[in-house]
Image (cartoon, rainbow, N blue to C red; front, side):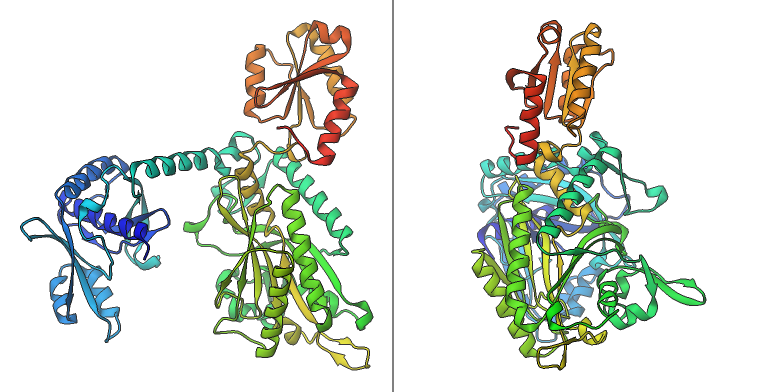
Length: 583
């Protein structure tokens, strides 16, 4: 365990000690260190605490730190541990679940007189003394509900999250980062810019795209289709439901049933709403015979699928129950495997760079324990995936056992403007479905052989990608993606007609433009357009109307030299087409 993780874990123990001091009778569950911090789960004897209690707990923690307590590891037998924690049912359960040969250790917090102030069942390690924790370098962040051991049938506990760092400077930097994350939260920006909404009363985890969000999605989809056609793909469309036979054959009812919705009865047969598109693409392939001369086939679909997610994990656009997957399947001969993997990886990287994500890292996921297919195929596929990664010069890590049961994969993670990683693209071999659906092709020797199939989700899903895109740009999209690109702002009502004329000329060139003709003052109109993150604001008054020009203000407050209407249109169209922007 790294030094910072040890500090965080130890700070968690100090928080638990403070909580049990302040709220006698509180039962303690688990408390690990996590990324950037720690948490502990508690069962309070009365009404659960609120976030108003956090400063009180922090103050008590500082007292404990200042008292310079030692962290002392004590090893004991199972019987001794059960006796020690007899009144702590969560600890008793954990002890009983330990393997018979597991060493049981408790960490005691002892004062200067060696008196035990608090203890917990724990493997450690911890700091030696609380003075190693800086009293100005931690903060309690939030309170949430959490089921015991993640099981919704078990008791609901109160989870307190905190963050801890080696010094106050690092804490300050982290809190500033969190503030920026909060500003970029796609749920807040989506609401403020009227891009999308969710409606619990109509169904959780389902996204409603508003007109401005629909504009951006339309641009993304048009670009997506155009690039796929350029790269040798064909576009498919498939149904939203299928008979149970389809999902039995594909293996989804064996391996993925908990993520599927309950069947519906149609003509006295079970139909399932689709969680995946692949079985439909296979049916299209099997609709006729194929020769090696037909391959490779690159088939893509923007297919809307539905997967059950527990309500507790739903999160805006990032975790939903209904989403449009930008799915593709490459069906090829074994000899084409290397070149097709390299091509799909190259294509994926080019798309990410076009959307403004140049920093990409690969994760190579290997065979899990419950895998299907011959080992030799897995070995060949892994070699092919690794070659493609090396050919593109990507840094990567091995994800041991992280492949799907039906084949190894490459996961691509993009890095956003704040340095956060988002897992998006998946390039996945499948040795399962070609066998299950008896996919074949006639090879050059006249024999029927099994093709290879590669699944590929490039953006992942339109919803999750849109959420990442919003947070990457903070809603201030590049011109070609902006749902409102130009606002024409008259300085007074007298110039409304000229503003409308300018807007009409711009609209002819397929730029999204509005004439701001309401009764607000000029500064209020400019502020409103900045809040809407409109790239170009064209301010027009008497001089502009007389000269046929526009004064140009960028959304960040900078000014461009005045231009004629024609010159501005040419300028903006070139910026839109090139993807270049000074914004």
